[in-house]
Image 1 (cartoon, protein in one colour):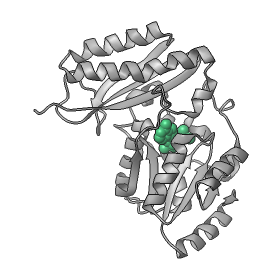
Image 2: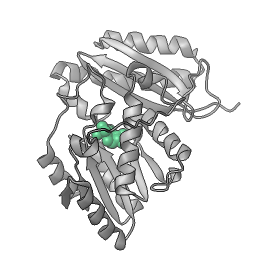
Image 3: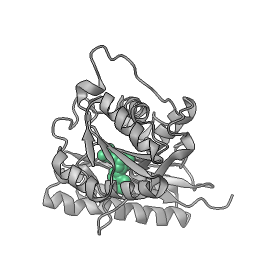
Image 4: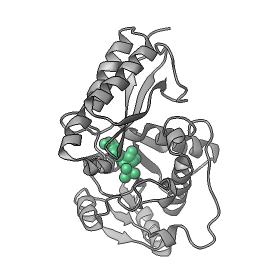
Length: 287
Ligand code: AMP
């Protein structure tokens, strides 16, 4: 596996790869875990070559967020990607991605606005802009993203549709189900921030979400169930809840009563100084 960090070499290497087949892209911020590697494995099922990227994108971090602390472990990540058969790693630095004079931002309204968009202003502008650049740099036939970041997936699909992206086509943006630890905690590079005590409490996030979904699917009142979920999380040791929302799975419009179409329960909660997110499918009852 070759690692490339300048755009000219990337373009030449991708052109060579393209001569022998199709390309699937897996964008990441590194500190790779089994969730990321599952995306790589899935990518191999969709194309001949996998191009991964590692770029800790400063524009999607807020002023008081963890940009400087974000784990960086390039050598380990390279070994993991190589062992999964990745053809090429694109690992630009900040100056290559945002040269002096950089002045463009992509803002996707609607799906970007609630949930993480409300608690992290500007976050999805940073995500949409960098993902559009990554797509233009690599020009993949297919791109894979985790459902763990459900709103991010919705934002990227919306952007691809709205901007008529050709590489990849919006229909070739593939969501991959969340990979979890044995106790249900969604794998995340940020789990490394948790103390052993916090790590133990963090398991309650997905467990309590499952219980809440059972209640909603059994016809319990939605706002009351979401209130119960929040108080359970606080009792489990979470410091605060950014949101606990039942939303339409596609539009992300919040729902205040039992869904009639596929829905999603989405939660962002802080434990200590670490912000964890999770989301799960909720069955829509026949209308
Ligand atoms: P990140 O490095 O956190 O930006 O994530 C890179 C990609 O991996 C994104 O598409 C994430 O949604 C995906 N991802 C992160 N964690 C998981 C997970 N536990 N299961 C599946 N995909 C994940």
